[in-house]
Image (tube, rainbow, N blue to C red; front, top):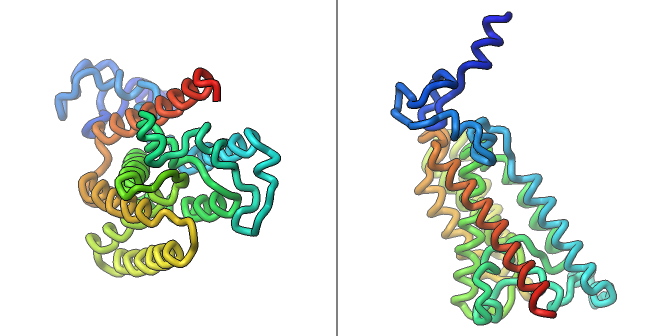
Length: 281
C-alpha cells in the first residue's frame, strides 16, 4: 500500500509521450522532452494533460451569463415582446456592448468580436437551441477527440464562421451556431474516416442532423447561414489536421494550443470590457 502511494507521488506521465517517468527527471528518457514536470504542473496545461477538464459546462455557463448580462443592460427593451422568436431578446445596442460581431465592429477595429460573438445570443430560443445542440453532440466530440482538441475545434469553427460571415457582408451577428456546425463536421469526418458499424452510424446520424440544421437556417428569417457554412468548413479542417484519439492521441502541442486559445478568448473579452468602460457607450 505504501509502495503504491510512493510510486504515485514520485512518478508522472510524460506530457509528450505519456510514458511513466520520475517527477525529478530533467528530461524524459523516452522522448527527450525537457522539464516534463513543469509542463505537467503548469496552470491550464497540467489539468488538460491529466484529462481533468471538460469545456462543455464552462462554455454553457459563459453563454448564459453573457446572455443575462446583455438582457440586464436594457431590461425594458428585452421585455418588449414582438413574437415568440424574439422573446427575451437583448437589444442590438446591448449586444454590441458585450461583443457582437459583424462588419460594423470590424470596421471600428474591434477584431476581438470575431471570437466574443460566438458566446453571445439574440433570444431565449436562440441560446436554448444552441446549448441543447452543444450538450447533445459536444460530449461525443470530447470523448472521441479529447478535451484539448474539442476546444481547439470549437474555437476554430467559431472563428472561421465569424470570418466568413464578415466577408459575406453581415452587419452584425451573434451565436455559437458556427462553432456547433463545426462540431457536426467533426463527427461527420470521424464517422467517414473511421468507418465500420460505429463510424458509419455516427456519419449517418450527424449528416442527417446537420442537414436538418442547415435547412432550418434557410427556412427561418434572420439566420446567419454564412456563419454556419464557415463554421462547418473550419470544424472539418481542424478535425482533419488534429486527428482523433484512435488515430493519434492528444499531445503536448494540443494541450499548449488549447491553453493558448483559452487565454485568447479571455483576452478578447478583456478588450471588449476595456472598450465598454472607456468608450462611454
